Image 1 (tube, helix red, strand yellow):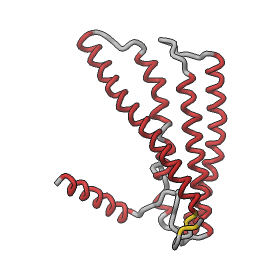
Image 2 (image 1 turned 60 degrees about the vertical axis):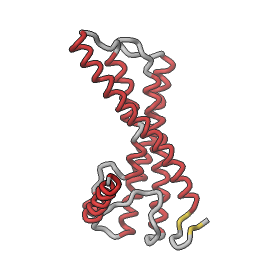
Image 3 (image 1 turned 90 degrees about the vertical axis):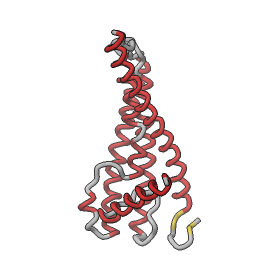
Image 4 (image 1 turned 180 degrees about the horizontal axis):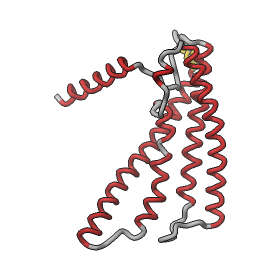
Length: 205
């Protein structure tokens, strides 16, 4: 089903919204983990300084929890185009060339992430089968190692969605971008940030 005026393919929009909910949830879990670890770090410092006590297995817990905030937000970042990009170069090319270059980059990323999903899942399987654990308090490492292929699989789905979106734009450059991050020039980005700041000020009043 096509949307009036823009040739927007409805299944693409539905898939984008569904995947965005999953990405938002994973990103929220990652942010919560960071927030929680900040409190644990403060408790560790105050406990050692004031009471001479330390959290048992603190380093092991931090090492395992790092997989949560290091990987779970990666698909969310990709959706927003928050990764490192050569935006100054891309802003100076035509729309069709822009979408073509973006599609080529996504295709390369799909290949690399696909390999990483496979190898990281094999790493999880080895840790699970061998009963791998941390050195200090013997925490099982497989839950943290499972986080990696799970997060990368969500990223892999996002990349497929973006590739579909870019191919659609190559075929119809005038169509409204859907399922892909939109690059703003410096002036447009500054204007958007000013409007966002002003809206916050108005709400506070």
